[in-house]
Length: 370
Ligand code: M6R
Image (cartoon, rainbow, N blue to C red):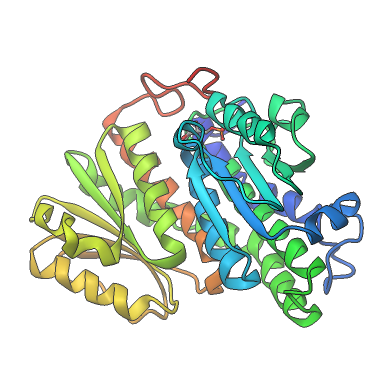
C-alpha cells in the first residue's frame, strides 16, 4: 500500500529514517550506547577474527554500497578490500586469497550473477573462507548458501529503483566493519564508541535531509528536457555519484554518468557545455578543496552546476551554480546522508518526465537470469 504517497519509490525514500533505525538496533542498544550489542553477530566472532582480506561481490546499487564499504574497511580497519561486480568476477577466474571474508550484497538475495559468483568461490574452497550474505530477504537463496546472514531491516522494497535497501546496506556494512575491526583489535573501545555515537545520529539526520524535498523538486525542473548529465563526487562520495547517475538513468531515462571528480580532465571535461547539468556532492570533508577546484573547471567551461553541499562548505549559489544545502554530517557517514538528495532528484525528474517511476521499462526488481 502506497498510503499517502504517489509512488512506492517516494514512500520508500521517506521510510529511510525508520529502516535505518531498525537496522542499527540489531547492533546498538540505546541504553548501552558505547559498545556493540553482545548478541550482534555473536556466533561469528571467531570467524571474523580470522579474516585477513575482504572481497565484496554485488550488482547495481548493491555494488555501489560495496564500494563505500571498501573505503571504510581499508581506511578504518586497514584490512585490504576489493569490490567487483558479480558478472565480471564470475567469468575471469579470480584469485580468492586464504582467510577471505566474502561479502555478497543483494537486496533480493536472488540475483543470478551474485549467486553464481558465490558458488564459484565456494568451489575453489580457499582456506579460512567466510561467506556472508548482506540481504533484505531472509528466505532467499543467498542467505541459505552463506555462512553468515547479516540482514538489512529495510522492510519490503517494491520500487524497482533501490533506495531504502541501499542506505540500510550501508549501515549494516558499517556495523560489520566495526565488529570485524573490534574483534581483531584494529578498532579500540574509544574509537568504537565514537563511531557508534555518530551512527545513532543517522535516523534524525536522514529525517532532516527529507526536508530538502521541496528545493530539490524545484531543482529537478532544470533537468526535465536534458539529454545527458554528470554526477561528480570524490572519496566516499564517488560511489554516491555513481548511484545518483544509476538512479537518474533508471527511472527518468536521461543518460547520466557518475565520475570521480578528479577524473574530469582525463576525458569527461570534453562533454561540458552550457547544456550539460553537473550534479556535485560536496559535504565538508577532507576532499572539499580539491572538489571545489573541479567545480571551477566545470564552471569555466559554462557547465551548469547543481550542488548538494554542507552548509559550512563555503560554497554559495551564483550564476549557473544552483545550491541545496545539506546539514553538516560526519565525513565517514556522509554517503548515507547524501544518498537522499540524489534519490529525490531522480524521483522528481522522472515524475516531471512522466515515466513509470516504480516499474521502469525493460527492468525487473529481481534479476534471476544472467
Ligand atoms: O537484489 P540485488 O540487490 O542483488 O539487485 C542488484 C541490482 O539489480 C539492483 O541494485 C539494481 O541495480 C537496482 N534496480 C538499482 O536501483
